[in-house]
Figure 1 (cartoon, each protein chain N blue to C red):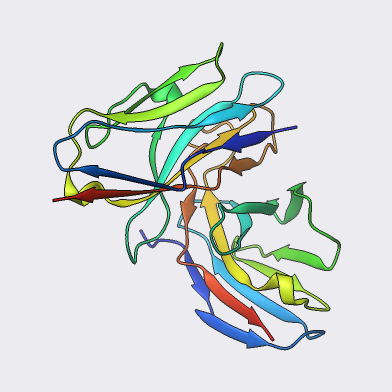
Figure 2 (cartoon, rainbow over the protein chains, first blue to last red):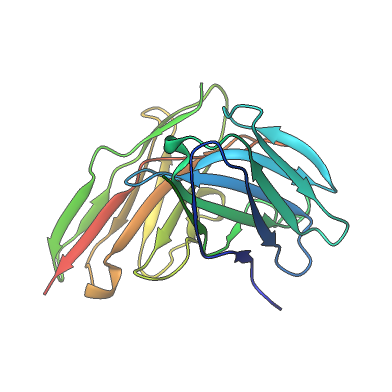
Amino acid sequence: ETGVTQSPTHLIKTRGQQVTLRCSSQSGHNTVSWYQQALGQGPQFIFQYYREEENGRGNFPPRFSGLQFPNYSSELNVNALELDDSALYLCASSSPWGSGADNEQFFGPGTRLTVL
Amino acid sequence: AQRVTQPEKLLSVFKGAPVELKCNYSYSGSPELFWYVQYSRQRLQLLLRHISRESIKGFTADLNKGETSFHLKKPFAQEEDSAMYYCALRGHNYGQNFVFGPGTRLSVLP
């Protein structure tokens, strides 16, 4: 069983650019959630994908978008980057809703994004 | 609105001393409560959840609905307990997301 992986590890972009972050979910998990963790804060929920559909979204603008693929891997896209987007972006996968194990999220190591 | 507060950014205790990390929440309904831990250079991982009523690594947490609290306790702290601790909640409905607190850094001194 492989854990959640994320790529890249680090990324530096300039304001106004676009970025794509990638996540591979843990084997058997079809739900992926993305979080933004600014320095000194807890993770903040961006959105969740289940069976390739977005089924929950936090208080983030539309320039934050995502995709989930048939193999349950996922992407987070951020357009028109702003300085405040600098953060650690975490991906977490979990078991299907109602499976009894769906309330445990398994986190990836994160992607550190720096916007200059 | 869903919200989780952890009043202490940093908590330092000596090895063998009791430790309590505070967590309060606001939620209209009955949420599920969790504690997540992040050890140095490791990823965020689940420590315990209130529905399991379990003790993990000597830690326990009791959900107090009257006080809307879910404090994490351990009677005798160990140096290896030093880590970042996050309290989190989730609603029961389908698609409910996790809401995390800002975290408390626990430092257990020798």
